Length: 103
Length: 373
Ligand SMILES: C[S@@+](CC[C@H](N)C(=O)[O-])C[C@H]1O[C@@H](n2cnc3c(N)ncnc32)[C@H](O)[C@@H]1O
Ligand code: SF4
Ligand code: SF4
Image (cartoon, rainbow over all chains, first blue to last red; front, side, top):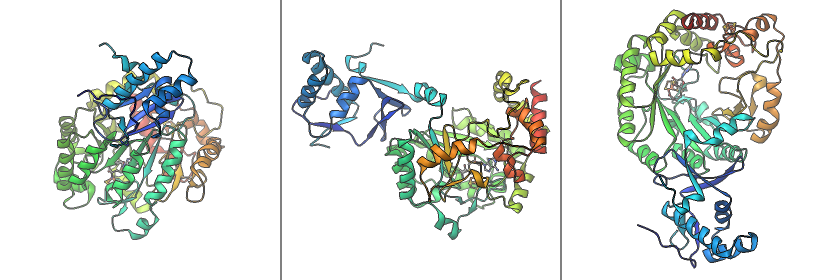
């Protein structure tokens, strides 16, 4: 089932994954089962992914995250919004992010 | 397959393809570490380099606590470690195994476990199902009660092993099997190989190379020596295993090197010890590799920090030289050292010196060379 992503919600990294920077690469490692299809997989986030992830500190709504990124990055706000929504949707689907209230 | 929009921000990578492995190997980067969380064991294998009795209270008291292990793991993670192996003795003997295992997992480490499977319960299965290990490696000492218990010297251990192994296999947890080729089980090796290949898809490996004990106990070392196969027996087994022989033949040019590069230097360490990994004993002693027990090559983590061990101590150990002429003339220039069990650590376990050729190793290596010729 597709999860609906809301700009007003606060999303946080799930306790079932650990994010780490190793040798300059930003990776997300599943701790619990069922995050990846194969147990032998890890995720690597690109620069945008990392910038979003690091802002998901439990105090910001997705809208706050987008506003922050708009100040820092030069891309068009619409593009940033689309990026953040796209990434959040994927991470929620994979249970790497959870909505704060329900966490 | 078309990538979805969102997938452009993240990439799924399966571990064997992970490019960081390669990058991490290029220079001196910590990749992995081994924790021997206990030396005690429910078995008492004849060939074992480490085991102490299950009920050895003094050994138990010296074991690092889960908290001390967590601290080491924290430091290892901050140095970049990615993968941790829990071994022993028998790691499942520890009552706080769950706490230790989860502590490592929750720090974002990939965790492997070496076990004899005899103590596996449903509770372990639930733990491994919820928090998957990278793999569980189980040693197969025999596939009949008679052979298994001739090696393990514990009545009842064969049934426990079979029960534990079946629990693991039925649960779908990733299990790898391996065997030691020993005097006490050599007659059953073909059946052991068949059993292992039937139970898992992974390449099953066997190891006929026994090194001596870490505590250099003379009586137990004599037992290990009596479990060693002769050079001829070892090559006969390798020859009979077409898969293994194929791999050895394919790598022949790396295994036999007529001109070794470092022939004129006296450096002892040309291996990977302390380059990408380290080992910690049950009582907190840091080594560059598990067999390296020479007293000047050990760092006590209870009195110092992992950072200091890794950054300062290891490079100092790796600078060590030899002035033993016999060693310099024989092993240091040896074109078949990669077919040999010789290394400074194993040399020390045999002779008390880091730079002594070992007759038995030499004989085995030469027979292996003849086999590949
Ligand atoms: C010490 S055990 C610890 C884990 C577990 N108890 C087991 O038996 O798998 C780790 C591996 O080392 C092997 N081993 C034991 N003594 C050895 C020796 N003297 N030389 C080489 N390998 C040895 C064991 O057979 C086992 O596969
Ligand atoms: S089961 Fe493993 S640790 Fe125990 S005695 Fe055998 S080889 Fe040693
Ligand atoms: S023991 Fe013999 S075969 Fe082994 S490295 Fe030394 S000289 Fe070479």
